[in-house]
Amino acid sequence: MRGGRADAAAAFYDRHAPSVHALVFRLMGPDAEIDDVVNDVFVRALESMSRLRDPGALRSWVYGITVRTVAIRFQKRSRQRWLRFMSPEDVPEVVAPAVSGELGEALREVHAILHGMDPDERIALLLHRVEGLSLEGAAEAAGTSVSTYRRRLARGEAKFFARAKSRPALDSWLGEGGS
Amino acid sequence: MTFHEPGEGLFRALREDAIPAFDHGAGRARFLERFAARRKPSRRRWALLAAAAAVVCAIAIGAWRATSEVTFSTAAGEGRAGTWLASGGTTDLPLIFSEGTRVVMAPGSRGRVDALRRSGASFLLERGRVSARVMHRTNADWRFLAGPFEVRVTGTRLGVDWDPAQERFAVRVEEGSVEVRGPNVGEPQVVREGEQCVVDVPRRTARLGPSDREGVPEADALADGGAAPPSGEKPEPYPRGASTLPAPLLAPGRPAASGSTWGRLEEKGDYDGAYAVATSVGLASILRSSSADELLRLAQVARLSGHRDTERDALVTCRRRFPGSERAAVAAYELGQSSSPGEAASWFDTYLGEQPSGALAREAAGRLIESRAAAGDDRGARDAAARYLARYPGGPHAPLARRVLTGAHE
View 1 (cartoon, chains in turn yellow, purple):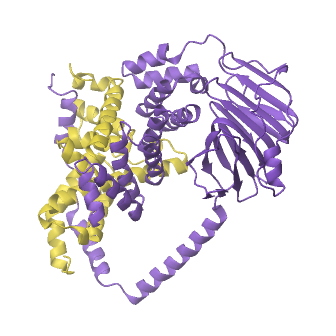
View 2 (view 1 turned 90 degrees about the vertical axis):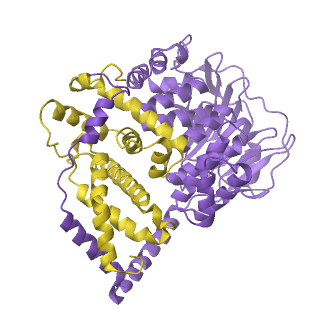
């Protein structure tokens, strides 16, 4: 791929696109811009391929680029909201989840909470609690130190549960150890 | 429904949520198109890139010229914002600004130029006295910060005194007028030519009356192009006999924030509730009357409840009211945590300058590398990385520091 071979680029895309798409979805939730973000991930990978020192670390490298690309998209949205004087609720970017019933209602509430959170804290929370990464692995993927990541995670969890408690649809999901 | 981890059921539902369909073929075609375009840049593309770069450079140079900040110098050379300044025990320290303003620190004074702007500067007086002759210009914005007080100036001659040990403040105006903000003075209090405003914070008294000092001699001498004269006798900043100011905002006997409802809610982890209560009490009064620890706690409440502006206000106020303290340095560190990379680097640098062996020094040194790298300051990042490795070779940021030094970081 570094040599400019299109077949290598195609193989790279075929191999990583499904996992990138899944990760972007889990980090962003139902969102009209998921395909754009996936494309951004591969463009960034293309542009920084020359800096990849260890080809054996390709998968984790792509993972890290994906996380940072999502973070950049969140930050860009925050700036746009500020510039347009729009509240987060006014920005038409969330697509309704396909799941229906109690689970669908709970997921809608969760996405609404995540949508209103600070981007860094939202990503910190999702990498550890949804993706299941260790603190060290999540910090590396987020491109920050473990101590910083730990603080973001603590803030993210505190905010998430504080807001979840005020939503009746999530009562049964929080359970006995819900906060 | 019971789970081992709080909220595990919700997070598992998110983890197992069905991934929507993805148009792999369209995405692949889009990527390969980009790949091909990158592989074969045309001459026209290069020409467009060169033209765009030239336009960007021209705009950047124009913008830099239009927004260049004032600068200042001392006898030691060009000054830097944020660097602590101290006059000698018997000598003045004059500061000369590029747009004509002169500020003179009286003997035994400490302070710093806190910020430089296109329209003026902020000077933070930690203790002692400053005299100033501020050049009057359209939109001039000069601020003198002393403990919890702020004096705003557009063009005038004035003197400011601040004794942090006694928490006593005075401002004298020789020409023009200024606005004073702070405890016990109403907000804002205008002080006009020939007047002085004297505030005793512990006694909660504030007096506005005619000035009983003769001019601002140090600034006058500099304004006339002369060298700073040796200081005269020790200033008498708290004159007697003056009329009473309007009723103070800070009512005597108000309980400290540590025993407040917002403080108790914060201790319980109810940050949204704590913030709501703090807002109803009045953030301005909390900022004016709280201790350094309480300001840091208020900042945390604001941060955790999603109110970044208030967090910043609390941290900046902590630094302004308690300059030189360990808590002020912690506030600088926290400001770094919540700032954009370029500004963050400045705050981490500030922390390290004020608390080089402080509890957060190692983390601040590491965050300095991160923030400079993120801001595109490669040289600064390398400097910070080298210093980090020299002091903390096994520290948590050591791998990043090594990557920065070898140019391997992304």
